[in-house]
Image 1 (spheres, one colour):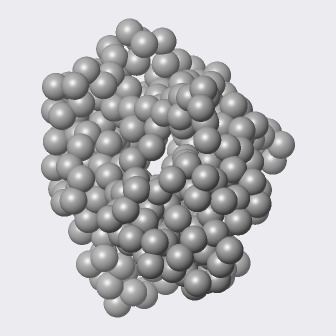
Image 2 (cartoon, rainbow, N blue to C red):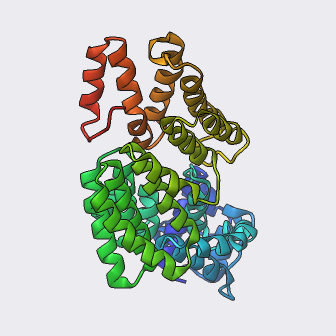
Image 3 (cartoon, rainbow, N blue to C red):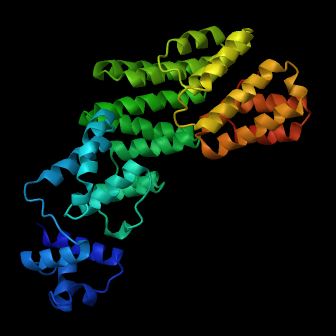
Length: 381
């Protein structure tokens, strides 16, 4: 075991517990010896190492058979390649071994990977004690993906930076990062990263209502997805194609795309209801909304999904909805929530409805202010 690395680990654990060097090494070794160990200036004898780490952790596993290293490496590989199936396969063993990992030389890896799994940074992690891929993942977890690219340029960091820009609606910068991610991934043969990068390049074009470029990227993503058998992503492409056609007012095309999706989530049924609404199929639209009340809400949450459907239902039940304050009271707070808590595309999809409300109620100032915040093209119904 590298003495500079073990010295850094001992220092990290000691600072996490807010212990002094004297408090840690009392009865084990001299303070000066511990100080040199932490700085990597002295070899740490196996017995001293065992006693220090046992005091810090309660007990300690040296990972002599390499089981713990193999476990964390499998998780790292699945994350950095964005291989969801490999991640799902590796994580059960990681969670099973987590207690051992937290009392082993893989402790910092375990903290970082557990933070990724739980989408929350372990407060015990100290930024200054991380290195390499640990620091890169920490930066991404803490919303600093563009800084991660600057310090650790890689297909993965470029993808995460592109995803961050995409979610905030900065599609031109997102496209640059995602294109770079795709090119770097292609050089390394990272097929899942290539696939995800192309998907989100298509998503950027979708949100810009650039159907021609969207189809170009989706066609490439679809070929890769077919090659690796990623049926879930194929369904995602189909959904985005349908949602884009819906925004462009191509309701029959949107209906044909969306009806072919197997997983009838609340969000899909919401889009289908709007297709039926625009085609004049009121009863079919209401049937979709009723089904949505019991469907999987995915990342939306039940309350938000229900509110999305309530807005559509109100329009179906009140043809003069644009002149009813109750409609504005449903639509505007929902739009505010989508802007504040969800990726940019969710609010952008509902922007035409909000502009139509403002226009019908002669609130032109609010409409102009809103349009200045959404400079990308949109279709007003």
